[in-house]
Image (tube, rainbow, N blue to C red; front, side, top):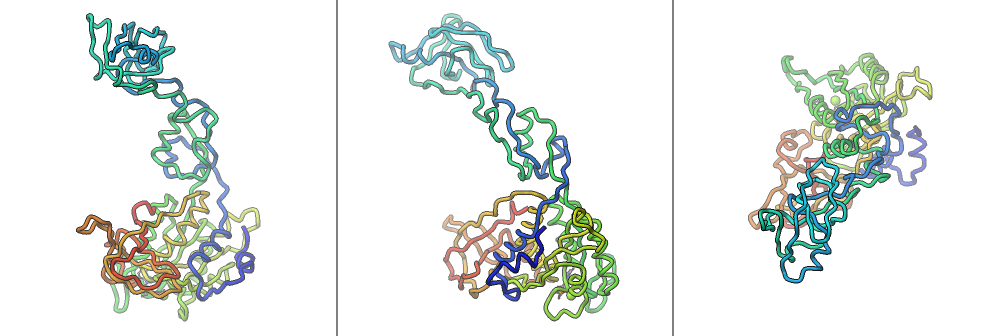
Length: 437
Ligand code: AMP
Ligand code: MG
């Protein structure tokens, strides 16, 4: 992995005290490299895992031209040859799904066919049964020549996937559709990247855990719970290390343990400027760590880097060091920095190739104050206005400690770095929460 210092030294306009969101993400993206471990799994167990290899189709799907409808298969010459506007054909047999399809009708014959059955030799068209009238005790059918065109209701061999065609690329997170696609190719097992193991803990002497009395001046630790939820959605293994006291020895022991057992460690709290605790000092001592003030709101302070337990050798890097994300303490800031920095970094670490989430443009229901020079992630509620248009309004209080704003919201209103204040009715960009994880 390239060192943080080497990546940063290549940037001409690097300012760690007012770092634009995009630049922070670019630096993180260059430092993080995918884990190497791979395992082979039955496809059902591979849901939400990261494909470690391209999947190339070894067969045509479907394997034969087949019928898309219940009806009658025939040669389309019969349409062109029809003297009147009605076509009449002799029925010579039936073709069922799963059969091998031995019938070969002539241009004046048809075969009764079920959905999925192999098209009889020479047939290229299926007339759905609801357009057909049977005549002469069912030995013949009759239908209007204009109710079907040549090639209708036939699925072509290989139209879903042709043999040799790339079906799924390495780096893809396996979806429910992909499981079906793999099954349709007859693939039982696939190679996926090993799961990430992510350690996390909260720092701050004011924090109490659920079940403990809430002493004067204390708050319950909520960040470990939001982190638990966000990490679970990313399908990583969790190592919840609890609340770590603001004590140099306890912090150092926690960081060392995290390095030895996890690929990444996420902490919350203790990275603000002028913070009187030891978190930053220990982070800096254990590795290649930088402390940023990001030009964003909420979520300004953040530590990023790689820490090691000291015993690691180059080729055992995965095991003895961990990527570090020192997130701010404020509960909304934790979620915002997770979604806008950590999520993409973990995707990269797990070898996943995930396209950026779409930003949708909608109308702002109200004026929003904003200063150029920082990116803001306001919590928004997107809904339909009385005129039928989609419109977003902000949840009430936008303070970075107001976690309720994240529960109420269904999207971020993303106000870009250069953007100025928004007037009521102006378009703004939103990022939906659904699909974020
Ligand atoms: P800090 O970044 O450590 O200065 O913390 C900023 C604010 O976030 C303070 O009000 C903390 O009490 C609060 N805070 C820090 N960690 C947590 C946590 N794990 N759960 C809830 N609030 C927290
Ligand atoms: Mg603190």
